Image (tube, rainbow, N blue to C red; front, side, top):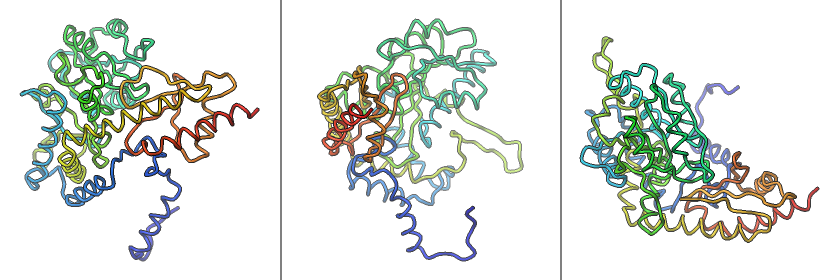
Length: 403
């Protein structure tokens, strides 16, 4: 068991130890880790790091103590609302990540339903492809979740969603796109259903929020999904994914900022007086806020469009390459940055192919339903595609010839 050392160690030695610890990590700069890391250029990484360091010490809880942080946060939220269909009544909150954004959206819907609809024990209706963080939040908040089966194209089935709604339902939850399959649920149809039934409708765009609008701008057929869609109440979008900010950066946006009062926690029954927070956290790191502000202003629309082009081009190249490998098939549809592929050769087990790829130093994600390999494209993967495809073809043959 590690204990606190009696005497300190000089930083140069500790730095060397830290760097040594990373030697067994996957080589993300070489494009071998298509998840967890979102990287464009070393220059953008440097800007993100320097902005983070500028606000390394400041605490975003102290808005009056650090008006600079409050200003950065406000501008990041406003840029996010502008990108994601926010109208004049929209509002938002900067959070630590998609899980917190989803948690706060569900907490808001719960308290809204209790206050405005008189539902004491509200529940959520969502397709089975919705992120696990929704059930995590519901577990903390003592809410029930009903998950409904998907259509054959992996999208939410409107009729099944509607059939699952009852007098306790307060929220419908859908994805844009969902992480398991990379497809968009029919947001406009679900919005109309939510509006008709008087339900809170949350769109989980944590994955696609900072990529989908730009992919649409360069010509890809991205369906409507944002705050401008009638019936959408809230939307989550991670800036530390395809926004390329430092980890710990996400937005929860509201079509009507008046509803943020249900997100807020207020308490005064202690000697210190009023304690008010919009997030689950109390003290909050200001570094991710500064990083997000710097990266968004550095890239602008033009920069994000170019990133979208790199990602979508890479996906098309990858799909074409996989389909040239005997025995493999790309699973469609695939609306944005997620690609799944499986085996159509009974002698080739796709998981065995994935294991063999792992032995060659590639981080492989495995989908359960359907049984497939799952990859999320980002710019750092693009230069490695030729190597990936060559190794993939070799691994397929290895598995085919191994009894």
